[in-house]
Picture 1 (spheres, helix red, strand yellow):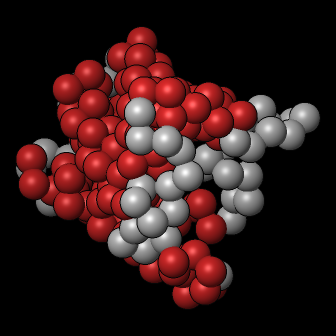
Picture 2 (cartoon, rainbow, N blue to C red; picture 1 turned 180 degrees about the vertical axis):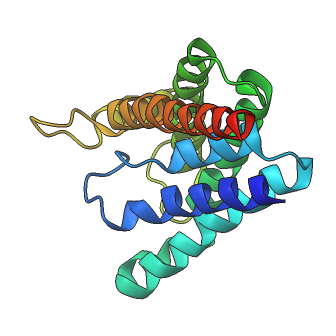
Length: 191
């Protein structure tokens, strides 16, 4: 039970840390999904805790920035949650309960690609806010625009930010948690 509490707290902390980071898509939210998906034992908690943490963060952001509340329950909102659930599944499948760094890196890359594909598809399919033609050319235009959506000299674009954060934060968090687990394990064997 202690492990569930520790992992849940880390997932919630990672999810809420996006409140302190102002660079779009450069936050550890994907890491929260990978971490929960990999390390929470119950198949229901693997999904429930990360998605609930994301939703709590969304509610806090909507309360702090009322313009964000228009995003809640939109097609892109559901696309984000769908890609987040896929990221949990990627964490469960690729990383599992015994994380190896190569799998953590691969999961970070794959979750960034899935997020990009799903959310840009939703931007194309959005019947209310979408402005792309409903054909293959419009879909491709959506993906191309998604790559260039946010540019700045320091932080690339949304996809690059997502890739950097999912891989970087995942390596950091899984590495620190592994170190913590080994420390606790060696202390218990000494005692």
